[in-house]
Image (cartoon, rainbow, N blue to C red):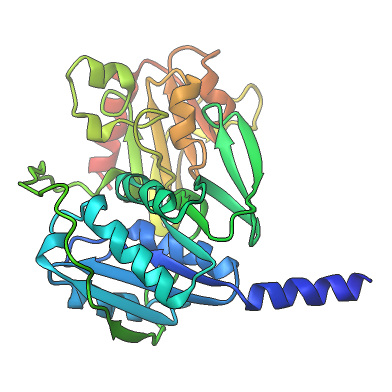
Length: 338
């Protein structure tokens, strides 16, 4: 009986086919799409990737090299300027009718959260949002109540439409693949909306959700954004962005910190060491649940707070009880010497 169940599960996975909607800027693929592809691979079966844009051949070639992608579908039209959900939805629906996918997914970014609910509505199914784990082709795990509760959702829809939290899935390797590339004929424009322009703040910093090291304090708390100190695209938390620096990097230097598992959890005597894992530093952050919802999956968490009872120390790997206005300048000077 067990062997029969395992065989049925294996056959079910072989019958799966997933369409991943790629997010890009017509020049390069957005990192969260690699996480969505990794999630799609866990479902089994063939993984296809849809690249839609105004001039996106370069992106299509990039996607074709991603491990796990079997086919890249490319649709180009001026109407896809701005990647409006009203125009992309008919394309995705027509693509599904042609290839009959069992799953359609995208990253849980502003792009995916705007697009896939509309796709699900047109297909007449209920979407599953912001999943953090795949247990089977029809069973997913997502968080509710600001990440305090894990909810296991079994979806009985004929077509599973879902968004993927990028920080919960390791990115698929960007090289080593050899997917075929197929051109699609875009459906007629809908004309419900028109893209006018986009004003983007230029910065040398990486995009927050894909940054390898995040220092969070005045620059990423809700209070700082509300006070106008920083723009809202730097906010981390339930109403901001979800970050989880977790891949391996050459090294990250952390000064004056000791592991929170030792003694009381906060250091009394500064030390200097090198940590080879990526880093989230919470500077002057108390640790409200709304903020924890956006960063608690980070691989290595460092907390600096003058209150030894601050909740942030409960999730931190390293903690320093100190006044940030004294500790941060000292750390900055030490970093300059390295």
